[in-house]
Amino acid sequence: MSDDLYQQAILEAARRGAENRRLDRPDGSSTVDNPLCGDRVTMDVCVRDGRIAAVGFRTRGCALCQASTALLADAAVSREPGTLARAEDEVVAMLGHDGPPPAPPFDTYAMFMPARRHPSRHTCVRLPFDALRQVLADATDGGSS
Image 1 (cartoon, one colour):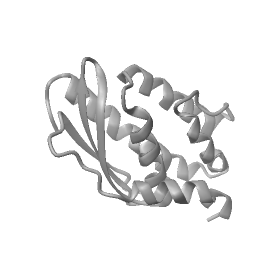
Image 2: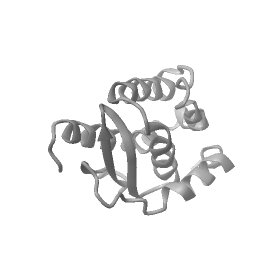
Image 3: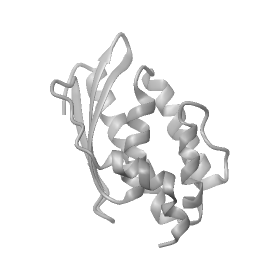
Image 4: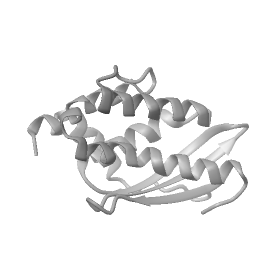
């Protein structure tokens, strides 16, 4: 794999993403897998007044997936679910269509721009969004998975 994918910023974020930061009493939890590469992300959330109050996670996977999980968990707190959907769309556009990096506070995803040339790695960056989207659907509906 290309060294440009594993620049220092990604490796530092990946170290944070490798931590087990599960929440003790989440409103919901979700686990998603990428069967092609073995990445697995579990996200926990607490939602208060229509906003994400806390995010917890556990990630097993490559450095890209771990880094993306850490960045998303940090940026998601105090955001409304719709903001996350827009951020995910911006990340997808950045990776696949040469779009600009997402707007703040998701602009840290610019570190993944080298992944544009590696379409097989796009799912690694997007997997945490899948987990968070799924758990938010459950948590805001009052359920838990």
